[in-house]
Amino acid sequence: IRISIPQLSEERRQELVKVVRKRIEERRIAVRNLRHEAMNELKGLEKDKEISQDEHKRALNQLQKLTDSFMLDIEQIGRDKEVELMEV
Image (cartoon, rainbow, N blue to C red; front, side, top):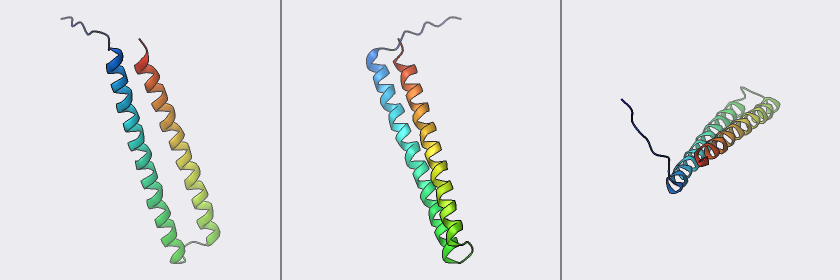
């Protein structure tokens, strides 16, 4: 059985790019929410004297680096997918 699938129209590709951008933004928000939860957890640990201020700051820096890394990955994946969709 052979099924002929036509090429995507320019309009449809642009719609799909919009969907990709929306999902990218949703992933960014999810990563930021996770970072916020982790920061609150660290703040609680510092407040309860389970970690020192230095450990708190070090953990925040590591958390920010990790968040930045994930954001860059998300951006790159999104750009790659947009290019793939716009290819004729």
